[in-house]
Length: 145
Image 1 (spheres, rainbow, N blue to C red):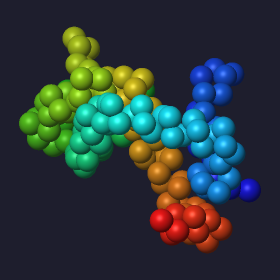
Image 2 (image 1 turned 90 degrees about the vertical axis):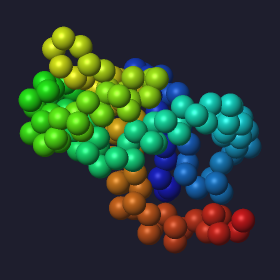
Image 3 (image 1 turned 180 degrees about the vertical axis):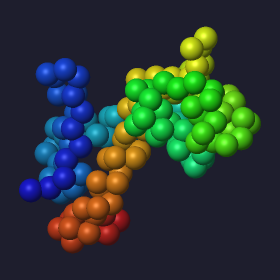
């Protein structure tokens, strides 16, 4: 049994993909190749999201907002994590057009896309890394290229 990436919307499965290329059925391979080709047209958005989450202070503040503040926080809450007010303003100013973090009259909040992106980057990657040795020993297809 291999590790799979599965994405649901309610009861509907949007994507169910084994991470081992050897396990991709022809129709799955076709979907993956189509999605990768389509994503090339919007690499700027992916790059902006990766850039946003490449900063440790921003990661700490988003983590704090999701974990401790039900996805939103006041300036004062964030200052406890960021220590410097400049980092708090950077949180919104560096958020890409997708508005991963937004500011309103009540403070700062992480958007649903921001939550999803953060959880994929933090929890999903952590799980992959934790199980990576067994995955890599079972699947050498990545070495063939």
